[in-house]
Length: 122
Image (cartoon, rainbow, N blue to C red; front, side, top):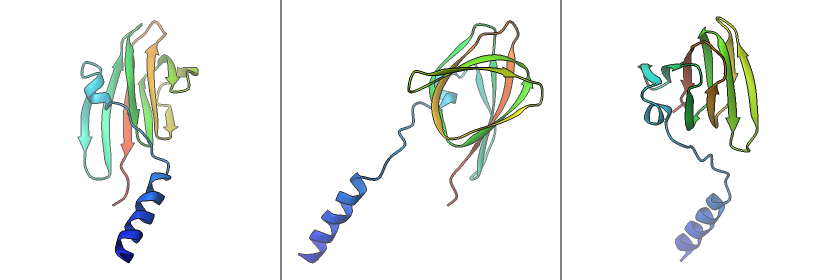
C-alpha cells in the first residue's frame, strides 16, 4: 500500500512541473527552406534560406544560436502574438533561448542563416 501512495504522490507532483510544449520541427514544417548540415548527440546544425516575402510556419527550437550568412530583414512572431523586426548584419551571431516562433522575410533580399540547436546534456 505504501508503494501505491508513493506513486500517487510522485505522479501528482509531476503534473505540476511546467512543461515546454514544442511545435513542429522546422525541417518538417519547411523542407524547402531548412536543410540539415550536421547532427550528433550535442547539436543539430541547419541552414535556412528565406526569399523576399517568404514566410515560415510556426515551429520550435531548443536553445540555439544563429549565424547570419546573408543579411536582411526578418519579422519574427512569438506565441504571445508579439513580433519583432530584426535587421540582420553579415556574420552577426544571435543567441535565442528555447522558443516557438514563425517568421517572414520583410526585406528585398534573400536571407541565409545557420541555425545551431543545442541538445540537452545526457
